[in-house]
Image (tube, rainbow, N blue to C red; front, side, top):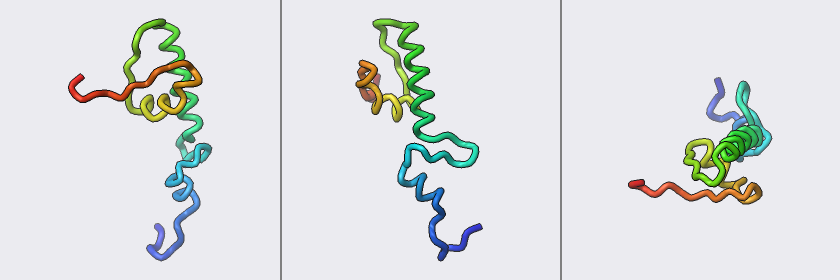
Length: 81
């Protein structure tokens, strides 16, 4: 356990800064998460050409920043839909 006066561990700083290649122990990096989500969405889009695909959670944080290079359009969910 850490003492309150100790400096913040490097792992905590990396997590807080959202460093894309940092992975916590037994976890995955943001880069790996994005790759996994993009692969899944790409597969779904190929199976449903011309249709809309609804996603949330990890999709929301990953696809919005990678949509344009793939030609995807991401729209925020409107309450009541």
